[in-house]
Length: 273
Image (spheres, rainbow, N blue to C red):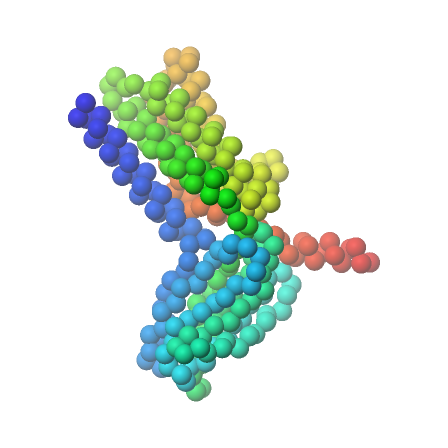
């Protein structure tokens, strides 16, 4: 009994750790850093995700009144020229905005800081921000919780498979059920609200979030079938558990839904010929 409690605790720690890692390393997590200009340290936090299609505001806390800023931006993957907007000062804050985009649209941006003849571009590489629609909490929170539970049961099943006499039937059934509900039912609903498409993975696209969910699902279906047939149960459950863990290690939203403006521009050119 005590061992079982300890194994559940270990599974929870691994699951929580992987969730934090995925969140903090994902392309939608705010970019934080600092830069030096004239011996002054400027700390920044740049958003990489925006809910809604209204303008996005970029702001920096810079008390030095002699430091000026220019926001430079353009639509990501487009033939647009860079747009330069002088940042306005309100006390110690410099800020400027760039236009909103439809869901899955992206904008890349940087800031040029100047003081006298000294200039500094931050960050060194453009920040890419993706616009998304609002996802109702009634779908979003259950999706997050259920996917967390799916990972928890999956890790516990993997640990259990290493024991001499593992009890895997219930853990496998629950993992598969949670994965179907959270990843294949609620997941597409969340994506539809956020980006206007229920499914962007195979065979309709290359959305990594969709494809990695599908891969994990297939692995757990194989483990479930192995239990039903009574063949290589521990091996299949271990494979499924490791597969889902590796899937979770891939930062969320990598290669996610996005508008390729270069293709949109090509379509417009053909229509106007």
